[in-house]
Length: 169
Length: 356
Image (cartoon, rainbow over the protein chains, first blue to last red):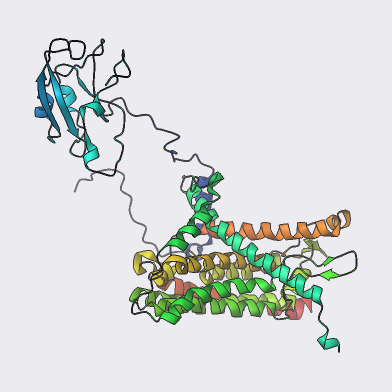
């Protein structure tokens, strides 16, 4: 049979020698390895103080984006909900009233926008599907919580703060 | 009337000494748990407990507090009295051994009073240690048997047979040492190892009995139930072994007794083979510093040696895999006992014909 790799080594089945029987050389060798490890660099990352950088393609918690004037970009087309393989996204659309032009960019907007983070698999298809550049996956890890209800993120939880008017939701 | 005369200072002195040694060994055992976790961590490229206090130094307190507040479970079918007695006995015997270890040289006060830093200088010191240590396995045995659990029972059988097998080799290796020293008193053995170099040879027993030391050390691993000989608590086969049914502070006592034993056997090893509180150039040091300071230095030297041994025990634990049970028995009966006997024979010949 052809070998899969050329790394295979034959097993040594010789009876153990006296030197191996008294264990001591092997113990000394083992100790030298483990004691050597004491002085090596530690692999631990003390998490809340120290954070490892994410890779550039990391997909974390979602955000709903605004445009340069601070208006919501989402037009409640529902493409993200359709693209979502976990069916985590639900939304309700509403029509923009006159006088709300400073709040919503398009004529239609999402009155309700919910993502169930327990369903979400963070695949990022919603981000790809969005024609209005409204939804993005940020570099934040989803925080844990005690209740299931708290994992259903509302529009207020997802929307980024208004760059012009930081107080308004 | 001499018999009835009570030296009140003697009693006070001993009481203070007992308190200090007991608290000291408890404290060292406590920090040995921390040390063990740190050693395990750094050997595996981790950093170990670091959250509780500076460098995780409050970790033992946190562990102790946790154990105290856990639920106390007495198994329904257990033999209640023996079940409780197991950890109590383990703890008691662990604390008793420190009585005969000489922690430092005699301190002579200005008034000429001699203060001995040994709780009891009994002339059979080392036999006392052996007796108490072999009692220690009863704690494990009773605890394991009283749990009414087959894993615990198997584990206590293992503990008993392991202790018996290795005590033999340990005793015989010690006989060789005792033939050289000619005394069973630990105080006498330590004072024979005075300094480091005398008459063209090392004074420490390690250099006179290297094989005996090696056998004694190996047997201490087995007596302490520590890896690579921790067969009684082999989690992969026996599922925690004799402390499976234990919870709360009773479990804590078992674990704690193990660390006190670790401390005491390191002290015994240092005393018997590494000169106890003796250190090189001690006469020059004694001449140049005050007696009190000299005593403190001696105690610190002994403590350093003890901590060295404790660290060695830990290094070995986190290096070697556990022996299989038949390998353990083979090593004990077929290797260590014959080696110890040969060692004894050679020592006897040397003592009889060479040294006279």
